[in-house]
Length: 158
Length: 102
Image (cartoon, rainbow over all chains, first blue to last red; front, side):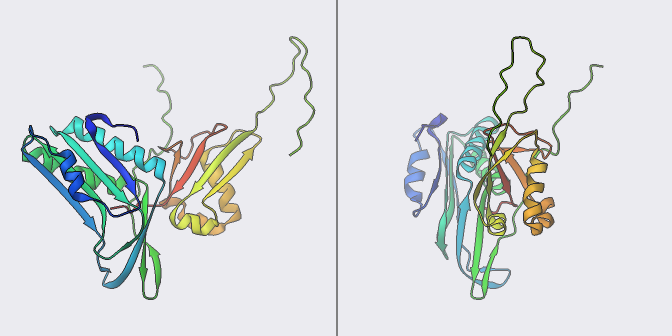
């Protein structure tokens, strides 16, 4: 895999996420804080007991969008390193679907960047989950990514 | 589609520009994949075509697609793209339902 700037990690995986290894990867002696986000499978959805989830992605675009988020983080916040991994395929209750770790010299930047990363991932990265219940399955309600509405026309010179 | 024998255009002969076939790869995800019955398709157009027209082609085959039109975004070559984007041969277009990662 190509090395990302800042030694960041952005990955899609089909096996359990090794959270401890990702935390070790982002931590460095010049840092003072690591903030992590562990998103995992809830046992119910709208009060219906969930059996399991199945995640799929437009993988090439999802990776590109995750790397864009990484680039934005380094522009917006004084952070050191990012690890952002999303798991695909069938996940059982309690299993981690997404894990984000951000290290920084100071905690405020790490908190803010981690929050921005998960919020932006949920809004812009093409990944979908299907929720399986006793009596059927549904695609989870999602967010419509902000896409350009129309091709900008060249403005006449004023 | 059999190709018409190409007319050899003589030097400076006033042959109208021949429209080039546009071949596009189309990807469907989530409920759109289930609805159309395929994850990936390939289509050819004899003339200029936009993402909107490409969607309309599939909506004609699968009328249920129409009701999802307002909750779908499109991408061209892995970038979100407006519906009026003209397509070029070799483009990869994807129709994306609301995303629900995390």
